[in-house]
Image (tube, rainbow, N blue to C red; front, top):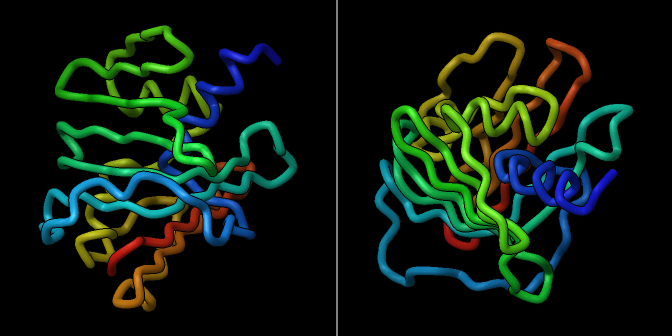
Length: 170
């Protein structure tokens, strides 16, 4: 797999999570102001583990801003460097990574291209706002959201996936 493809897969996971999160990773924490439950910014760590697909599994520091129709996701490596920046608005989505810019029709198309499977980006915003929005094939656990933890599992379509988010500030 090329470095570009690997980084693209990592970036899209921005929206996903491994069973073992990297504890104590240094990364920029973004704005220190209050978190608006509707638009963030949310910062922390996220991981995606895709069953039987280690090339689609990853973990990274992140900052997420905006809403499902228009937003931005920045992913960080363990020492705080920027891995990728995803920006989206109606009708377009961009991925900046490794000095290159790639364009897509939507954030969903970006995620599918980068990870090989759909991740419910719109639902992620709902879940972070504390609303357990139903998504076919996914089961979200918001029971620890007050402590800054969110987990969502995909059972269908295959392969199964486990998405975990740990927020810097609940």
